[in-house]
Image (cartoon, rainbow, N blue to C red; front, side, top):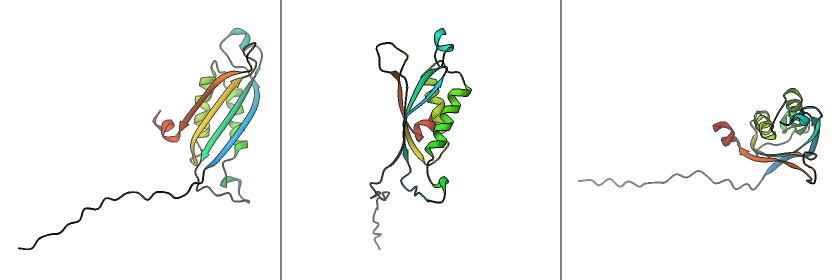
Length: 142
């Protein structure tokens, strides 16, 4: 009688040896728009300050002759400005959520941290605001 000798192999995905991390950021981007729930906030525009960090797919390699080869921070800044201009928000939190929708349109973005502040909202405070971090998976599951 012949014996079958089987070997059980465990297949593991190859670990990436790359330590590359590419971050695109927009720092202290200020626009002035109507935002807030209080009556006085619905009359006069206030400063809204954005700070955004985008974790970009590390295999994204810039091509000096093609702006589409990079995550274009100017395009993102314009989208954020248009959001605040075209929709009246009561809460910074709502603006943050809509900002994720715009940012995650670029499939090369893995995760995003958005911090939005109103520097003039409260007397005796330098700033008030909200900061939210989301991965692409978090966004797609929400």
